[in-house]
Length: 484
Image (cartoon, rainbow, N blue to C red; front, side, top):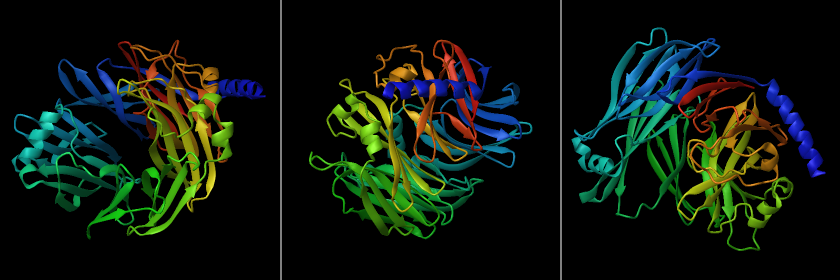
């Protein structure tokens, strides 16, 4: 019966794939990747990284509906990190971190580009200099000149941004978190700091997840410590509030967070060392002032545990805490009054590397009721960060996952392992498409024998329907758009 179903799925998938609107166009060889994409009427605006003649920076290009270049301009910035790009009122705004090791300084600049003529203006947002001497010295000593300093957050509507920067003063044994909260024009709305004691090799809590609530103009942060302790932070114009939290569920948990205007949610998976206690999904709901409203332990559905798992998956155990197998919570998304939790099985290799495998997708109602949970095979054996893992999108309220594989669709479905990765390995791009009931099907989007390898993790979505990807093969580059 399974073989019959599989044959139907493959036939159906092939039909849908051919009906999909996919366009590709060659890209200049010096372009390394497409970082951000936006729609301007019928045109496409891309912000891409480039390297040419020992020069590095960002290429701004405007393409027509056939992906032909209309205009382009470059920003030379060899020792920089791009934190964010937004598009507002016909202007691109780029937040760029400029690293200057010789002067021991780090500048955060906003470059505004007019889409009409690609003219540029620049303003300084913030600087780290001699007053943070020990932090900057250690930063350049421990990292390359292209390393990122600070964490950037954007609200879902892109009306508010935040930049969080950590610095240490070794002789005082203190650490300071500085949060800059900004509007969409990068005007500073408020600045808050949290200073606390720090001991070497004792980081205690580590960052896990964060989001911005546009309604309350607040940044929410979830931190965790191995062993199960969590800490919540609320940063707004009224202050910097920190709350250590101990859930009723004492089992080990991997959580992430997201929220709407009235509440936020810490969601993920819980695990038990006791074989008699089953693992499951953890749900918790908070008010905007960090008060816990409800928490639940939810069992996986029979679909995930019985229908979706192959014999080898059942043998190794989904979300097992064995030394070689774990599960990471990648993302929490909210769509159409539902909460979506995405987890990925992770295999730890003997050489210290990591291989990502199948995807657990959980759909909950806002009140924590389980609608469905499914396991998606991708049978990946890729350790190249650019091409491994997956990325989720909501297109017209339907969930789609994109991932690469060296396997055929039939071999993915029977959980056959792909060969060990090697330089120049050819990959096929797949999408997995869900309906509201959690039923899903695979679509093959490219053919590894003739097409390029596309970088899934850096793909971009345009106005809820078009996906933009960057691909390469040997010394050739392409840009691809997919209309669902």
